[in-house]
Length: 285
Image (cartoon, rainbow, N blue to C red; front, side, top):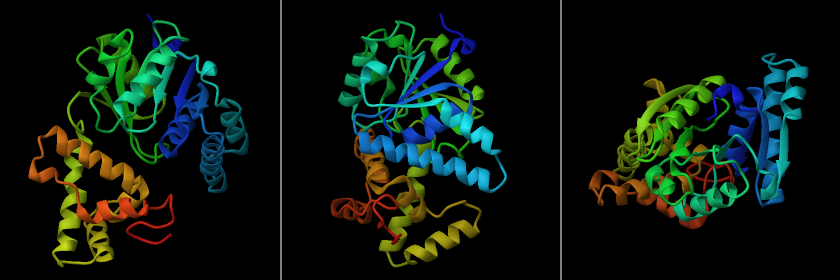
């Protein structure tokens, strides 16, 4: 049975914004980190993101150049799943249960039975994922927030099958990564996304009703103490990702009106205007 001091290698699957951010956090905490993605272009973009984040820290005097060099030395890029042998696997791939289950089962076949599998899902059922994975007691949620290298909170999610040992190990690992873990039980949207949904949905309803425009709404909420307005935040997260979470909660809560997806965001997703990553969303970039 693993202890946190036994964790030497962490594999992060998915080199998108979240996966790259988690890999950066892992490597910065001293772990040998394997960033996996089948798409070579995505891998290179992920590496560029990590390098850029670290260089900003160096330029601002928050990190010495040697530390940046050491972090990058602990990072390995791979597009061959056979290289994803690790003590802990964290997936940050598409928000589809069947795809996550397939990935975990393929990795289970090449890893030890005590390898921990953590999903970065923001809204899907950890219980349902674990139910279909070999040795489900080692499956849990480890939900980071965007941008992962800056945001402190991590929700450590226990599904029905998650063993207490798995939950404790991931809690301790989160602390080793310099983050703030919070234990939560598996439920739609966990805590943060369930509560935060209305930050986005009410803002869109207010704009659609003509109460204020997008920019004014963001400025008002930022002036009230929020770090980012809802529209700027949706663009940062990605409108496709944010919309998918809303749809997931809407269905999980039996289409309760309070979780009804916003028409404004649905229209942007249909047009491929996903926010910062596409250059256009609620704002132009």
